[in-house]
Image (cartoon, rainbow over all chains, first blue to last red; front, top):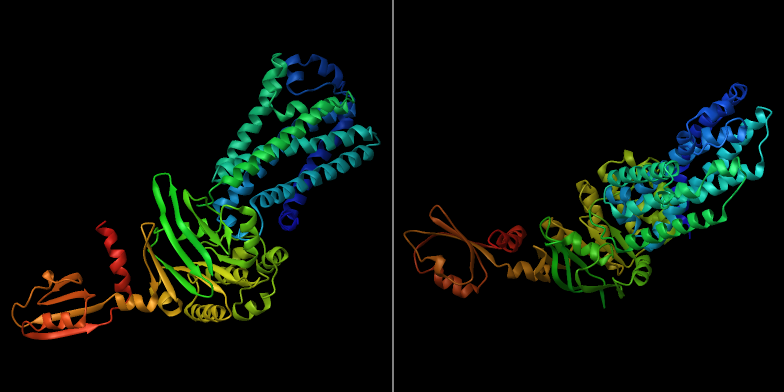
Length: 262
Length: 294
């Protein structure tokens, strides 16, 4: 077992490391900005921000390193951009192989479609875990280098709980990947859907129509609450895991029934 | 024992026929040639048999496994080699890495044997491969786990003539070892040289299933006859196909008995006559050609 995951992970190794380095640079840039921001009285600035803006980006405070990181890094770059990335990557998996006639050879091996899909999924899951561990360490290293400190429990939780969040985004991509025959279409739609879900969820909080965001993974992963308020809603975690399970099951069921002809 | 059994196997893509009610068996230890023009349904039939497509109706078994039973079919694939017509390889891995990956799942007891016959540049990334090298890599992947059934979809495209000849020789040697071969092709000389039996597919339907030798025999003789003056009119004869008038001569395919043919031919003064075995192309054109009238 796991030969396919092993093979795909090796193939993605360079890309995975490049992604981690890219995000690390961005993260370190933000952290390096912190000392010059700290003295600026960001909290007053924050209080002057329109409530719409605060709600939209889930900003709780800006005057502490936790609040700053949550607002500048985790709420936007992390949860939106990386969410889009994993959705996009997931959408390319099966549709991309289908388009280039690679499934013929992959499925000529004695593996069921379910195993093929789950191992491909696991290979992307490895990327999610790798990015979380490496970026978590980079964030911690950056903060320590500034002579600051952050609560390790909640920093770890922000990264740990982003794993089911990214997995849900990956799951959305995967469902599209087994549905569409062209990677381009699946990937564009994945970007559109994940972005729309994120925006709808963000806006729903500002207009007091929270039910609108009920299907958005971002409803159930809030780095600001974890880092700044130091609260984790267990039910959110359960809902995210359920979303992952539903999306993964759906992609397996669709893939098992799919006609593989170009 | 049949290694592939198709029973009324039918596949429609929407309203378009892929294959229509295909019933035939591939026997153990034979090289079966599956012939037809492009779009006749050869690849559809192969993909159905491998479980890549779901049949609209009908059924099939491969090495005893029903194609609708994914678990059984997956188990059977340990003993099947498949060379698709379009080789979709991951581009950024080397040939060696891909072979190792396949070996980790299905075994690779014959990799070394195969590499003596076919030698793609294994340490190079596949994206730098020529089509001939890709084809050789595909052949290695197909046979590396010593399967008892191989399914080859247009296997010699891309190979240079020397490698083609080596491949044909290899296939025959495999057959002699007991391997069953299901071989799709539109290259007739290739089929004639290596296949034991042949099935011809046209418009998704099986129009002929026979041993290659007997098919050539039954394909009839090609007759070219030229009379001094107006001779008998072959248009009125039985067993005459594809009749053409070329200048003063008639040319046709004849599938009846020699006696009947000769007794008719000599009804008038003959200037020239040729009776010969037709090229295999003409035998197949006999089957393909009707498509245009259909």
